[in-house]
Length: 230
Ligand code: GRF
Image (cartoon, rainbow, N blue to C red; front, side, top):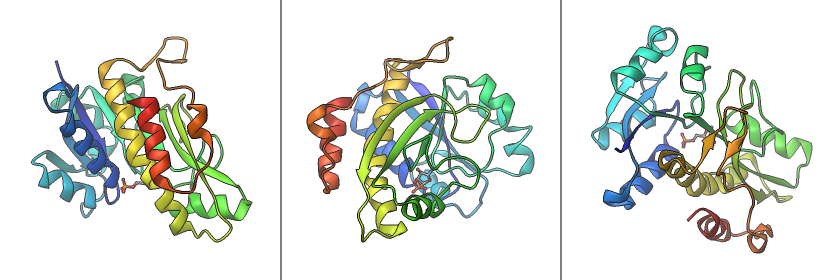
């Protein structure tokens, strides 16, 4: 039985796009379908993309993104909730009901550069201001705190002296697009799960050493992610 995914997004939805494309590339072997795209912003590009793919799209009002979110997800028989640039707090009843079935991607290596106020370009500006030499993408289970739940997968990218928030964001985003869909696939397949002990099981915990070298070309990172995650 294919799992039903809801993607929650506030922005352009490039991660949504990469997830949809990846699942489509698996054809009949895909373990999941995106059935619902929901946003707190009626003008979010993600909603446009969802519409383009013929999915149910919802521009959530205040009620739907707070006390009504669980009912909204239930109405669409959602098994897995994927945050892809969703900037609002997810209600606690949702994080509890979807424990182990609710994930987020963050454009830095958590637990650094995460938490309240750390979203979008703010993250990359903070990385540059701090002089970090390495950043990356983190996929994690969502709990009741921003950017806090158990980490499922990470991938590093180098930070260069000439970087701006925008060049760094671009480099990280390429990695996000390779990493997130594959993690979601493995979650839907049941390869990755969150144990009752709070530990992540079946995660691609370790990077293949040969790919760990921080090569500047994003192609190398994508190649590495494929080698580790399939
Ligand atoms: C990504 O960088 C993601 O890590 C962060 O928000 C951004 C969303 O980008 N949480 P997009 O809307 O998927 O293009």
